[in-house]
Amino acid sequence: MKKSFGHLMAVLIVALLGTSLLAVSPASAAEPRENRISRAEVISRAQDWWQRQIPYDQLDDATDVEGVKYRTDCSGFISMAWRLPASRTTDTLDDISTPISKTSLQPGDIMMWDGPGNEGHVVLFQKWENKSAGTFWLYEQSGTAEDMNHRVGNLSAFTHMQAYKYGDGDGDFDAKHESFNEVDGTEFTDFSTSPTYCNTDDLPLFRLTGFRNVQARIHSCARYEASDNTIRGWMAVQWWPYAGTDDDSTVTVGTKFDGFGLHPQLQIGTVTQREAVCWMGGDMNAAASGLRGCYFTMPGKSGDWSLDGWVNWDENNDGEPPFGPRYTYGSPIIDR
Image: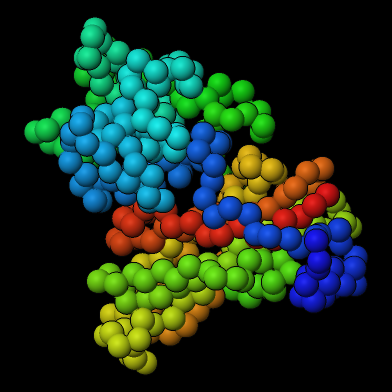
């Protein structure tokens, strides 16, 4: 295959930098279905259906944030939140999950009852409200009377249900089914978005109209540091006012948007190895341009490494992602 001039220049730059990064085609924008998924992303996907108030219907379907369709009942909702390739039922969700105690529930776990025949129900655990009192927040597709529900429950009302976590929970980074916790990233305001490390081609444009009139693009980047054998991954969001709207001005009063969470995801092959999070909140000026990012490092090992990720925008400074996750394309691949 013929190499382009840009590709040869990228290789030359890498050689001058003394790294072994090979810039090739960007990785896929979206995570493979049934891959490892962070607990934070499960909750963000669930919040998207809640925000959109998807109606309950066992014979209908609705799309997730990537346009994939799922059945709009309780188990279809869980299948969507766990980013499965298709809708499962309360008869089959336990095939890809592990029973746990209710006191060990973490965000993204479920409680499920598989009743006789077509009976059964499943809910998604979000977080503890008061663990000592047994109260917690949950999401559910609860039936035609209530549709999508986000409410506080008490364990005393769920004695007939078994708690489960997604996957086998053994911490195997190569596991196909696995939920895991994020690590803390480090925020930055000035970092390279060079095409050597970052995807800069045809980045999607995001517009937050009707909330704060902002346009944004997200860069995902990765590089190998030979000096200490580490992979560094980072994501950066660039934003500017949406032309022709109220926020397209130099007036800053009333034009600050509450913030966003950046979630860079470092992968080897198609399996997410680690996800970090940085929360940028409270001081984003929608009437001006800006750049904020999040990075983290991980020990290097053999394989094709890349980084993609997602961002969620917060409406009320409460950490809830009202717009659901918005994915970015993958970085150039680190071939080690």
